[in-house]
Length: 317
Length: 166
Image (cartoon, rainbow over all chains, first blue to last red; front, side, top):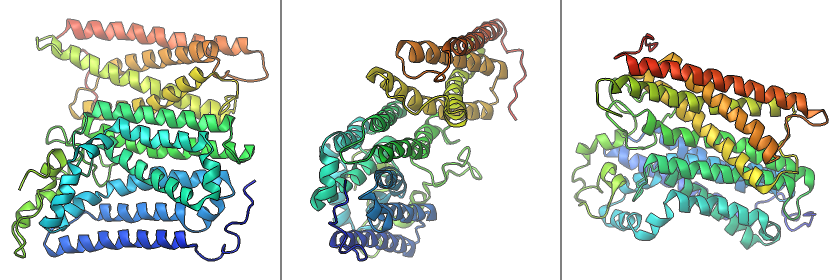
């Protein structure tokens, strides 16, 4: 099945959806780079690791949505699953670790940063960034996708196709931010044990779904492809899951020397102890806040991320 | 968590033991995955006969085991940094944890829930007996070491074992 030729005639060229995706991704990359340059001009350094993480995350999304892998994912469920790991797991982890919201809050003029801060502290977003809610949106969405006719529909209807991919990416990103409780500001961030519990339950649901796909292939996927895809989903997702567990547990169980850490993702998670000459690593852009005073006649900067990160960003002036 | 003079070694004992138990769970799951699934291919990814509750149990078991592995290693790193790592108490927890979860896997998951068997196409009895006897030996030795180290911690102001931290 799935050998219908709806993309056959333009296989060599990018379809309109793929052009739009490419342009969006390039815009995201450029905006981030421009923001980093703006910060740099103000004398504030932004960790290179975060910029690299952003680029890597966009690359994951791009590989999943545009090009040969995306093309083959139409016909091959195993390849589709590889795309799923890139788009829904690894990509979101890298994008979330890049702290794009923090970067935006630091860069945008106050007039534009304030609505963003207000949005971040709004009640609906507080609900969405609850790790259990985000987990249901993320893994529950996958259950709906693979255990209903949606997967078959997605292969024929380009609109459904785009909506599903957007949801997988957005829910993956939301879940990553919610479980890590950062590095971007998250309102009402639960304590690490709760976030770890949500993460373990989501991983379990992901495992169970993989095994259920192995037993009962989704609509339109041949058995061998479904089984290989299910094993790929299980085993390729595992490293991402382990990194997430590590990032949740590190500040909780092995806090930096400055007391319990605030749960922000550090640039290099593999680094032990968090010390480097007694200085904590990544809050670096926030430490240089003295330079963030009034500048360019634009008034004070948006609140430093430490305040932003914890609660009510909109309140502080 | 008591603040009495004797509370300190007890808290230390408990923390080392907890790290060990979690590491024991992680070890069992890791051995299961690497040795029995990947190397021997005795276990199957899914043998298509599993009840739903068995699948959920297995999914949770493996998800939690990764959490346990990561958390226990971080706990050991924290203990070593504080120079309060206690090898024997950790080993007591490790053996108890590994034995307990091996027994859980062997009795509940394999037999009661019928999740999967140790091997297919063979007479299972010797495999089941070996599996569960090993589990029981691990568990018993772990608990024996546990009581010994607990007595140490309770009796002395300081445990007899030298700290192994750096």
